[in-house]
Length: 264
View 1 (cartoon, rainbow, N blue to C red):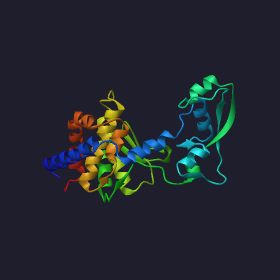
View 2: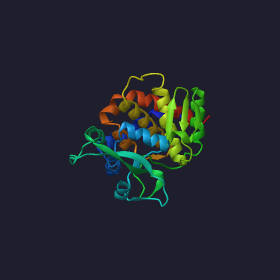
View 3: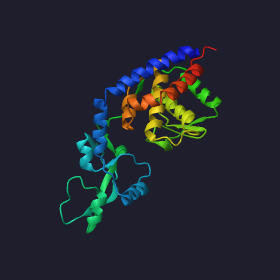
View 4: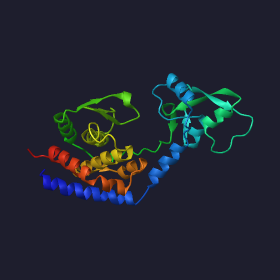
C-alpha cells in the first residue's frame, strides 16, 4: 500500500471515529457502566484477603449482586471470605466500605464469589471486533519484530486482553482472530507512541491514541472494530481528545498500514 493511499484510508476512518465520539455514550457503554457500578470498591484489607485466597480473581461480588446481574453462583463454588463491618447506626446510602469501617464496632465474615464461579447472563464486554484478519496478524507481528518488539502470549495477564512494556507485547491466548488482531494493533500503537516517549501524557490521551490507531488499522483491512468509541469514552476521551492527537494517530496508522498492507 502506498503512503498516500494509507493517508486517505486513515483520514476517512478517523472522521468516522470522530462522529461516533460526538454521538456520545452508546447504550452498550451505559449497560457496561451500570453493571460495573454494582461491584463494590473493597477496602485495602479486603483486597488483600481476596488476593491471598484467589490471586486470579477478576470481578468479585456477593450472591445477591450476581443475582441482580442475571447470573447465579455455581453449585459447590467456594466463596472468598472477606470482612463486613457491623455498625450500630444504619449506614447512609452511598457510604463507602472504608467509611463504614471507620464507624464499625466489629466485623463479621461474609463470602463473595469471582465471576468464574458464576453462570448466566454474560457481563457486557466492550472488547469486540469482527471479521477475518487473514494473514495480517502475522504481518503485524513481523512489523513489531522489525521495531524490536517481541510478541508473546500469557494467561497471567487476564482479564486484560493485551499488555505492553518496553520491547514486549503480551497477548491473552484464546481470543478470536479478529479480537487478537485488534488487541495486537492497540498494543503495537502503545509500543510505538508511549513506552519510550510521551509517557508524561495522561491515561486518557494514551488510550485514545492507541484505540484510534487500532480502529484505523482494523477498518483498513476489513475488520469491524465495533466499540472503539465506547472504549475511548471509558477513559474520558472525546472528539476533542482525538482531534488534539490527530497528527500522531495518523502518522502511526500510516506507518503500520504501509508496512502490513504492502504488496511486495
